Length: 240
Length: 155
Image (cartoon, rainbow over all chains, first blue to last red; front, side, top):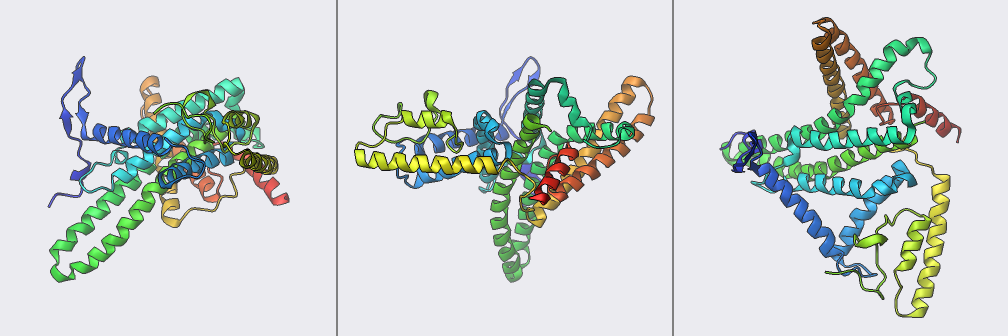
């Protein structure tokens, strides 16, 4: 029986090295490619006919599309329209990553903080650039809460700056923690099933429930990741 | 797979210049949708366009009355909320630690700034957790969130 943490192990599938930097194609990269290909296939193939009355696949694709579009509209407003392709790609990639991880013997790339932090960093840098482009130096106003007495600036400004810089960390840590905890829990409880004989029915029942919960968490965390991106985008665009 | 053929009403698809987010009621979308020629049956087309204008009017109205409001969202389920708050607190302390460590190295003041910034980070973490719990979500800009809240109460 493999240990509960072995499922997160990164294994190089093809060794590659450019200029001394190890860029091997790993199982993590493989599943990212699978996720990207599946999302692309799902969207293009189901929208191929583009019928007025959608079939099953087209219906599913439209639900995804409208879900993200409405989320963006409700949280950012009309100004967020041009960022839709990015937000939609982000949502689909994270959600497929989470859901693909639920397939036995697959690899959950969102359970690695390096992957999540890279995504979060792109969002953070992008949002900050958008903020400065739209508001110029006025964007620094973000770091001092409106209406606070000026004497508190010496404490509040460092706190707000830390608070601002903690965004990519909290985005990355949240997704990582949720995915990792869920998969460890499944593995540990799964380990009990065979160990305690006939009583193994109990952990098996629990496991069934937790599996359903994990599917929910996979979708929910993709939603949370995306909606927080929308909220950050809203802050950068509308500010005060 | 080629460009969508004319004669079929299309939802927007990632081919070419007509790609716009459909859920946004706006002139661009209307213009783009006008570009998609409707069904062959003229009667169907007329009733569809009628419906389209009605829907657009409703969407516009909604857009005007409901400016983006985020504070009204229901708090998520316990587990997810707990995870969010803990991630928020850990992240802020981590960032404080990092900034303090970097400044200490640059200014050669070890260990004073790291001590100071861990406390500031803990403060920021508490603030972020408070904002998540109150449903303000955004980690920065409490002033605006408070004002939105006040406006929400007056409504």
